Length: 362
Image (cartoon, rainbow, N blue to C red; front, side):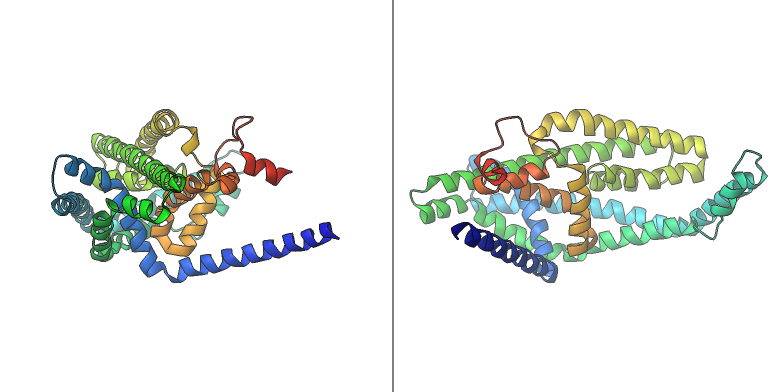
């Protein structure tokens, strides 16, 4: 009798938890106009907080320290917008020419297939006819996507306003937590640990992304591609998305290499992207982040789909950092540690699964 009641309660709890998930997701989607700027401000605050702490350690009052830190963020943001806007204006004038050139290349390839004698050439030529894919639309799509992404700068005022208040309160939050929790210091230390690990992840990821963008922008400049600064910025931003981001960032650069010179040049551009991303993605980044701060490839794909659906293109860009924050929080919560193990890219070492997982498996 007790066992039957426990099974019924388990089913009820599952349905209740599922309903909670639906409510939370609906709230995230409906609250996107407010929650998305807040999420951006929170990530910026985590990255900026070390500057505030460093200034305060040198006896700079909290107000001026926050002002100087935000001033640094504004300068960097303004520089990025200035570089991107100039490149986007130039790109807009050349899109039609690029589209025409790409269409001509595509048509010549189809004609070459039609004249080829190897088996299946005619089938390929018929299947890859220009009506299936209009290559000239690729650059128009890229231009519209970039313009949409940078138009989000119109919300920059709200983001930086929230950032100022977060930084102003950040230094007093620990004291408030200690006053609220009283003797329960474990919760306070756990919160501090979560913030420190999120800060470590975002700091390392930003450093790796910046280095990737600089190297790939320089590579495009060496190969005399148009818009090397814009291509470098694109590589920097998309590097926050593991695996898929580097592939997406390489497509415009390879297309420019194909249009400006030819297939050999496009292949050379692609080789540079592969080497840089393999070097950072497989050697440097894993050593800096460690296995513990990794995500499963399937989780990366699903997080892109989920956050992109909830918060649009900017949500897709923040998908991996947001999922990593969830993973770190779950990892530091005893009864939810099994969630972080599911999100991880590799199973844990034997004997370190934790009591919560063992109880779940039992």
